[in-house]
Structure formats: C-alpha cells, structure tokens
Length: 511
Ligand SMILES: Cc1cc2nc3c(=O)[nH]c(=O)nc-3n(C[C@H](O)[C@H](O)[C@H](O)COP(=O)(O)OP(=O)(O)OC[C@H]3O[C@@H](n4cnc5c(N)ncnc54)[C@H](O)[C@@H]3O)c2cc1C
Ligand code: SF4
Image (tube, rainbow, N blue to C red; front, top):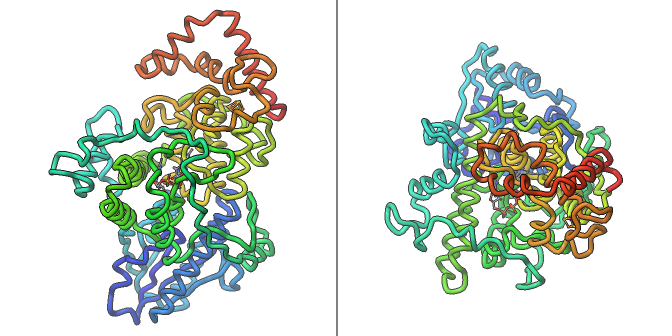
C-alpha cells in the first residue's frame, strides 16, 4: 500500500501521478491543518481559498475513483500536525511506501525530509511538475557571475522554451523587453471591463474557521467569494484575461487608481501558486490569443506579461532555493523599526496607503506597484524591520507563499538582501506615486510640499532615508545621481526634512 501526500499548494491536475492506470493500492492524503493556518496570521480569504481549492481537488480525485483520505479542519482524526497525521495513517492503513511531491517551502521541505529519515518503510519524493526550472537551474545559470541579473535569466528562458522567438537568438518584435512602454498612468480611459467574479457562498467554511478559533486578518463577503477555486474557474479566469485585459495589460502595468483595484491585472497568481494552472499553460494560451489578434494587441502588452511569469516568477523561485535558509534572516540595511499599526487597519490620512491597505484587507489582493511602491516603499523609507514586513506580506495576500513572498518582500522591496534581487532600492518620494496614480489629488497631504506640516510624508522620508543609509550605497552606481543631489542640498533644508521624517517615524499613528 502506498500513501501519497498532496499539500495544499500542490493542486496540479495534470501531474503524472494522475495518469497512472494502476491506482488500487494508492491512498491520497490531504488535510486542512492548524499547522498551516497558524504558522503566520493569514488573510481569511487566503485560508478559504486554499481550503476550497483543496476540497475541489479531492472531489476530483474521488470522482476518478481514487482512494482519498481528506481531513477537514474539524475531522476528529485530524491531529492538526502533518507528521503526526502521517504516522497515524501509515499505521492504520498498513502503508508500505510513502510518497510526496517536493514542497516549495523550505519549512515543509525540512519537515518532510526529517519525517522520512525516521520511517522504517520506503519513501520517495517526486517533482511537482509545475515550474519551468528545477530548484538548482538558477544557481547553475548564475554560477561564477557577480550579479543575479533577471534580464539575462529571462532571455535564456525565452530561448530555452522558444517563447516569442524569431530565430534561436532573435526575439520577436526585435527587442527582448518593452518595459519602457509599460508605464502609462490610467486617467479614466480606456474602459476597464467589469471584473470577473465567482460570487461563491462561503458561510460554511467561515463558520468552521470561527468555531475552530483560527485567527485571521482581513474581511470577506460570505455571499460573494471572488477567487477561483476549481480548475474550471481558473481556466475561465485565464480566458477572461485574454479576451478582456491583455489588450492593455502592458501599458497600465504600473498604474494605480483609487477606484480601480485590478485595472488590467490578471489576478491569476493564486491559480498558479496553488498549481491549479500551469505557468506554461498560461503563457501558451496568452500567446496563442495574441497571435490570433495581432492586429489589435501590441507585442508590448504580451511581452510584459510573459516577462512576469517566464522571468520574474521562475527567477524568484530560483533565488529562494539558492539562498534559503539564510535569506529569511537577511537585514543588510540594519532596519529595526516596528511596522505601523495602520498596516492592519488602513487607518491613516495618507491616501495612497489607506487605499492600498484597505483594498488588501478587503480583497486579499493588491497589484505589484501598490505592493512595491506604496506599502513596500513606506516600510523601507521608515526603516521597518524586514521580519515584520515579511510577516505582513506573508499573511495578507491570497497568493502569498514563502518562496515568492519573501524574495519579493525582503529582496525586491526591502533591499534586505543587499541587492541580490534588485540592483537598487525601490524607494521614491511622493512624486512617483503622483505620477502613476490619482491618490494625491484627494489626499490630506500636499505632494508638492516638502517639510511643512501638510507636506506629503513620503518626501521628507525619502531624503532622510538616503541620508541615513548613504553608507550602504556609496559604491552603487545606480544611486550616485540621487546621492549627489543629497550632498548638494542646502543643510538647513535637509535638517527640516530630517526633523519631519523623524517625527513621522516616531509617531506613525498621527499621520
Ligand atoms: C512586496 C511584494 C510582495 C509580493 N508577494 C507576492 C506573493 O506573495 N505571491 C506572489 O505570487 N507574488 C507576489 N508579489 C509579486 C506580484 O506583486 C504578484 O505576483 C501580483 O501582484 C499578483 O497579481 P496578478 O496575478 O494580478 O499579477 P499580474 O500583474 O497579472 O501578473 C501576472 C503574473 O505574473 C507573475 N508575477 C508578476 N510579478 C511577479 C513577481 N515580482 N514575482 C513573481 N511573480 C510575479 C504572477 O504569477 C502574476 O500572477 C509580490 C510583490 C511585491 C512587491
Ligand atoms: S500626497 Fe503623499 S501621502 Fe498623499 S497620496 Fe500622494 S504620495 Fe501618498
């Protein structure tokens, strides 16, 4: 008898396990466990999303006639601990072999390796057959190189998988990267199509979480849960993206707007991170749709999307496996402040932060630029300890799984890895936010003012950050222009900016 474990983010419907003809002696095991609901404080929609997706997957296995043991959170046999559950099942079912798919989280990888080393029966680990690179491809690609430049990795992936290539060496459109045309502000047009919603009733699962005492953050409309949790729903969200959003995806990738939470973003990260959708399936569908509509959809819209999945997503996973476990304790800028309380409530007068945080609490979603240039930017400018920043990002987003959360947060956003992911820190004053959004127009603060009482806090914080941290950047070419400006700044002006910045940092609740 074989016991096969399927973790909550291993819902790969196309895995070769499910193509095997002989399944009578196989038990599949899935479990909703406190071990997983409690390792950080998750958004309630994240817990619901994973539980619903796991239940759909288990029903699919069951309908195919497979033996499935599924423990709901309140199942009496469920000890809430992965290892104890497995040990008991092995005994109860007379299991002679244990099989699992390689976890994507270091934490679970270690747990399962240790568990297998204690077993007296045979055990085997399989690939999840989800990613386009192995755990070690990244380290091999960058061996001997000084910097981990994403662009080179991305080009190599394009060639390797023959994605949007004219010849073996030449990219379609004559360029690898159309990033410069991905920076438009959205001013009310073109129209944004209505959201694709799923409107599921999740009352039962919410009741289960409450009665079990699971602590969560954020809000949920129990009658209208809007994330895809079946394979069909994931595929329909992908179709929706191609038919409605791809047309403008690249142009407005970096735009932000008070009334538009999703703009032209796909919302596919949860479907992919849970593995219900395969990244190559997403890329193929999007490229195929573009080829059939080339007269309407520009290459820049598609390349921008392909870069995120073929480039950034695989790059982050490779970075994770090449740097863990050390990565999770990196704090190269020596930041030790606390995360302001308003990150948990949205209660701040700064419009950009209030809107991005409130949206995150309501939807378990913010798009990349809100995460990077609003919440991430503010946390870095106020020199918050990356441990605190990580915990927030790991909990609040429905797509947050450590391999992709920590590399984006600690690396790209907080520069806590000293520049492994990003070549310079992603910090800005209020002017960038003003350029890319309409947040500033109705803000309590004035983005054009620098250190006065009603001045945008980002402005003082920006110069203070550069001044405080300049020692870390003195050899960074990409920072030299801003550091030159800092050094030329009138001393009295700098003093006023720093006084205001220090007040903001010491009294976050006043702002
Ligand atoms: C501080 C911070 C934390 C983040 N945490 C996460 C996280 O926990 N989980 C997560 O999936 N993404 C994370 N990201 C990356 C990115 O913000 C999300 O993938 C994206 O917002 C998801 O929304 P979407 O599906 O609508 O993406 P779209 O804008 O439609 O992009 C398409 C897809 O590209 C991929 N992608 C885009 N950017 C990245 C990136 N930087 N890294 C990896 N994949 C990317 C995603 O799979 C995404 O679904 C984070 C970014 C930052 C700055
Ligand atoms: S003025 Fe400053 S605080 Fe207000 S929305 Fe603009 S950037 Fe944010």
